[in-house]
Image (cartoon, rainbow, N blue to C red):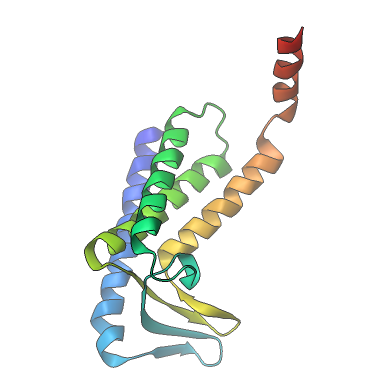
Length: 160
């Protein structure tokens, strides 16, 4: 299962980078492209901040934080013994999205964003979506698939 997970991470990173290449090729020179009027637009933005434009101009710090998070989640994905579909999918998406944006920060000094929806002001990208969906899946795993009684039993036994 680990090999499949790593292949999926590579596919997510490759997909993210391919779409960003298209954004640079077609959106940067030509300007925004309306997909659904009043709702969805593709527009080229150079984001020096974190996901959704937060913490602008902290590229080095954000790169370090992203790299650490990718290593931690990847390590957890490898060594965690009680994966559910949600925890494995969460790890794959978070690592894939993190690496996708880390590549941009390394090569460009900023992240290429291109998705703009009318009800959510910041422009974002596919890697941001991967990370957000991954966090949601992790929360589902944590709240619904972890055995909290096991943790309590270990604490009680250690106190005896």
